[in-house]
Image 1: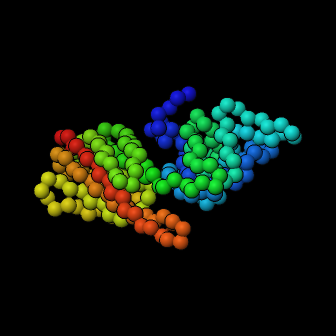
Image 2: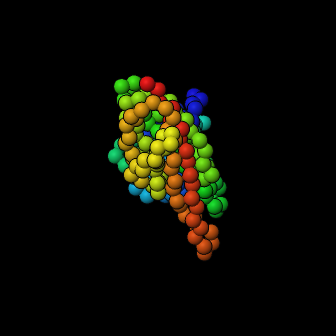
Image 3: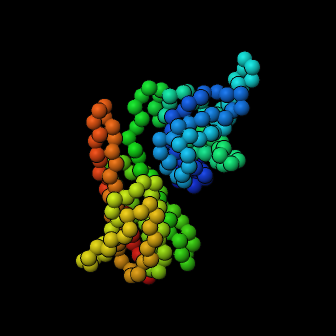
Length: 215
């Protein structure tokens, strides 16, 4: 069944990018070395039922089973099966990011803005590259905003008109209540590093969320 990226994100219990370690097994459970968690958190080594199995000389799988080769990098969208065990398939959104031996892709930040209050709860999801993009959301005055990120920001500020910017705690989860109508600009900055041979290169990513607040 076709789903949008937002639906796949909302439907997964955990999303991570990791390197396949096993290939097909008799139980169907394969291990992945986690490079980073996109949604939720957990151990660095995770067990996933991929939907394919080895039964004697035969491979048993469906058209939705993922076929990860050891050494490949995958983004896995998974559901809880039991304590410490997850399941995935292509319909959930899992896909290969790189073949065995290739360099994993640069981090792609997935920003999540959850708005909760008198008017219900909804989420704004946006895939951002390191150059940063603009996301927009429309909320009502008095609503409680919960900003949740899958990375550690180095700064979070909120600007309103000509007022002095308000600095919020640089945390992965930030709560803030809208006080007045108008347009707010939420600016985020994050710093991350990437290894290139023997050199460590530092990158800075900047993001902007425009909030339009109604009475």
